[in-house]
Length: 352
Image 1: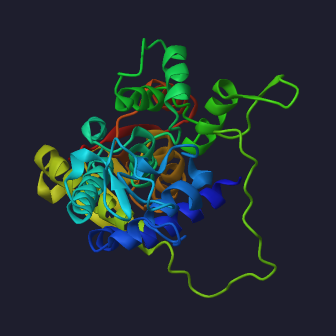
Image 2: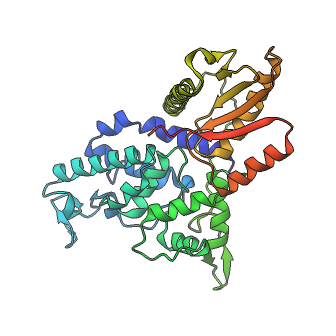
């Protein structure tokens, strides 16, 4: 699947299930056997190409509607229609409200990078980490099978078992993500190495996607839609919010260092410009979740702004993102600094 297909589906999901809609979500909108547009259907089925959690029982949702109402599983709490985890309460309404609170916590922790807090939430690992990925601004790797995650952890030198926090393994994968790969490309690389499926004649072959499923292709249109698109409004708003927070904190740091009179915002499209007696510094802010992505997005822009700037003083160019560079990205940055004949660097601004 092309990257644009991943992004379109992710944007579609985020627009459908923004925070406001989840806060006002009913039990029938959350899960149901005759409703294919529930939140749980979106997580399990409609976004499968963003990472599969197929094969788990419906109790992974915390509460579910039974297909056969008279068959009540003994290890859960049951009424005449629903079954749910005991830890969520004695009635379906109480259970659902508590589950919804946990989902909102997962989203908040994920958006703010507090992944270790997700480990303690009662919902099943595959389900809660799929939710976390979808709201993480692609700061997590979309692999959710514990078996596969343990193989990956071992490959990178972590002695992990079923009790190892998933956040620890996710962090390990993020630290080892090559600078030139986005999270989807890295996911496909890991799956090709660590997921093996059995064929009909009992031989083994490397899987092409996460759980041995056939690739799902979305039906193409023979007409190009030239109307204005609204599907990315939620994602774009979140990105703009993050950009503004980084820029504002960067401005405060630079004013403290260089003085307010030397720090200029939004001049000729430049995010931040610092004037010094013997040089000028251009700062370009990006909200991507990886240093390498910020650099790829910003470097052309910042050089163009520098080129058209009429001041003849030497210029320095700094790309600014939220997260620090990992070891692979540091090598990429050093390569750029070594091979480009310009003053260049990357810095991160912690906005938590």
